[in-house]
Amino acid sequence: MIELPGDYVYCRRTLLQRLQEAAPGRIQLLTGPRQVGKTTLLLEIAERLGAQAVYAAGDEPEASLPGFWERRWADVEARARRGSAVLLLDEVHQLGDWAGRLKGYWDRAHRDHVPVHVVATGSSALRVATGSRESLAGRFERLTLSHWPAASLAAVFQLAPHHAASDVVQFGSYPGAAGLTKDPVRWRAYVREAIIEPAIGRDILALGAVRRPALLRQVLTIAVDLPAKIVSLQKLQGQLGGRGALETVAQYLALLQDAYLIAPLERFSARVHRRRAAPPKLITLNNALLSAMHAAGAPDPLGEPGRFGVWVENACLAFGINQGQKVTYWREEPLEIDAVFEGTWGQWAVEVKTGEFDAPALKGLFEFCRRNPVFSPLVITAPGREPLARRHGVAAVSWQDFLLSGPPEGDSARRQL
Image (cartoon, rainbow, N blue to C red; front, side, top):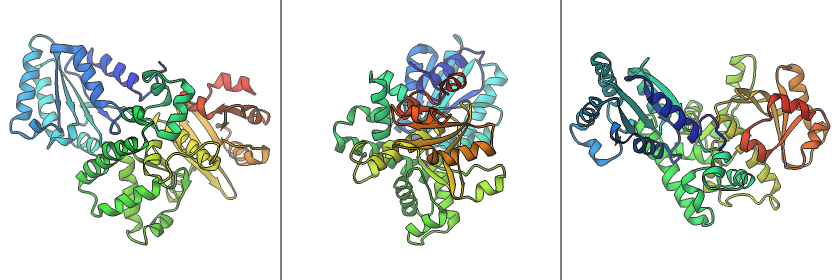
């Protein structure tokens, strides 16, 4: 199985390695979207560790009873007397004053040299990040189990790799929904009820930072309806019927990003203040949200090539974001390119072209790389059309191969040209 940073295999291996270190070590905070396998991962670790592990969930009924923390910590300390032990706290942000409580117990374990490890998960990046910054500074390490890449779907569900990549475009990559794609009504109900509604109704609204829940839902609906589109906040406000200040719209987009639903990309610029002033490019972080919320469902690649191309672009940019790359876009009228990638993949200027294209269609790509020569040009294209880009001296990869393993490696990319 291909291992990518942020996927299930990577997070499992990393956590198991850290749990082999001397205890008490730093608290491990595992965050990520709903329904990507955080609970499954904790339960798998608990099964592997056996009597060393204590598992508890913050959303179980017992968690609301008095003495929950005391009972769990007493249990894990008793096990630690026979060797190191691990406390696994699932959906920790559902517990009141979780960060303060965890800080107190962790400090006591260090003071008394109790060999206890702690792994905690949360589906709300903002709630977990806020608590950890306020109370756990210097005491934790954070991992993100992100939206599943196509390679993980292929391996776990025994799909042909290119079939898995196509599914990522049309149905997204939530593992719990993967077996329901042949029943569209059931599939859509699962995505809405198990992912979208809890993310908004429980994760975001529980922050107390949303005074107008209906407006938040409208912002999500409009953003999902505009995948991979550059949209000014003024235009978003206009589609809301003028309701809501620009600051409120921007705040709600940021909250949707913290819930792993929408990413408003900034414009690439060497000057930060210009980047922040530019309109965002809206990326839906899992194409399942597009299919579940779009009245027509997933596009037909042959019958709707234009809409399908937009969904491919959204999936490719979301893959970059979910893999921890810094993703921006570039536009200097009348030129623009779809994305700029910076990170472990290297520095790439990217155009997504699923239809026919010629040299003039790559004018923005050439100009961006002329101005920013540290970036390599890359065209993500339909399978079989890679030679069209290479003919113009540009590295190319099919969108299927890109969704499976990212951009070509440096040496292989140069050999293509």
